[in-house]
Image (tube, rainbow, N blue to C red; front, side, top):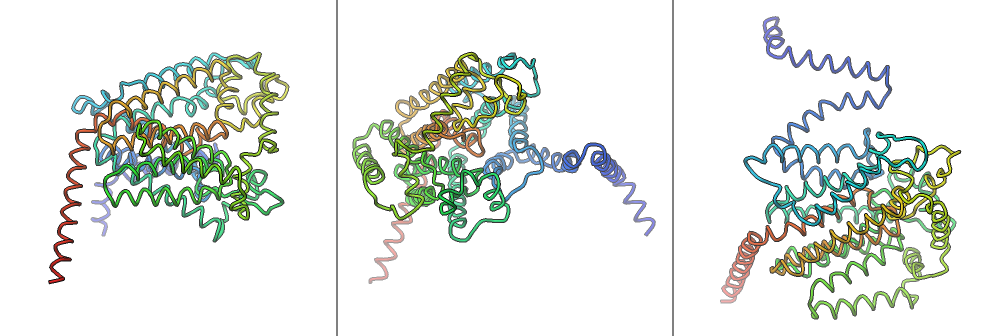
Length: 504
């Protein structure tokens, strides 16, 4: 026994000592700095393990990023670290690996395009915002960086990760299926919230911070939020996701995938109404309208336009479905006298008076750092109710102008790719669906503060990135698609032969 222990200690003494020192560090952190530092120290082995996994199986890390990003704001999951940390850590690790591998496998040629240019312009502007001292509080690099990470740098990370790791038709196909499965889970979870009930943590949020915006009409109407941070986030995401998968479904040549995508789109849009998010209706219309233009096909444009106008007519000019509370709330989006919309207009008029003297905004990251005696304290606390208004308040009229120009550059370049560079109809459908979903989520962000909420940034900026790399994937995609269609036809032929043989 002594010999075995001696042998074990000799072979593993370094590991035992390391774990013991880590344990002491965790206790010291708990005593001196509190629970959060203790948790971070305890997670160090997990971080080291994650780094090892990323270097050993980099695509596993990519898929982990996609899944983790989707559930970061789910109220049933409590993350004991800053919410952006898992995403940012995985993105930087994936980019680090790509840089290390660049000599053997060049990755970055696909990333040189208009979207990269637009993101660099926006990131450069946000970097210059560190010098913004409109509030007269001095330059605070830490506060600036905490805001700039989410406002600009994350988008650049997303673009580079997707440009590098969506490297083959098989990976693209898997990505669309994973996204569909995640969206399907959220739709099912929304149905569960409506028909079965909320989890204790979801109910605690609903009765607490979410009560004023999610429990309406004297408690008779609840806006459900599925696995998202709030109902507006869920509703706009569901609308953009519906646009994408309906378009994927009607353009793909694989029958099984077609029905899968169409079913996902249908279930997502049905459960979108549970969110009671009125902006989602306009997101749907805008998304499909964009695809009608991009498709350059009267066969698609005419029936789609008729269906859209019919849907609009039902909501705006009839009382069909009025017995359903969520549909009644959606229908109020067409009411010009809606109190909620009027309150937003009043808030924005107040903002305009202050922002005339702040063309560069109050500064990035200033939400919780402006004292009450400061002239711009109200601007740091007033609910923006829109991602665009949020950006305008932080970066001023100059910043929001730069941002809109950058978005138009990104979107315009992607539309050019879909309309003039792609020849394969399935890829045109994928590209058109992703462009349309991007417009839908941008419109949702005009009406709600959702674009920088998880999981939207990764999904929709990543989706637009995919559009730019589709021309590089097209030859291999056509080969893969022809092979799958041949297999599909062969199965059909064998099934027919078996059926005919059984009749003899």
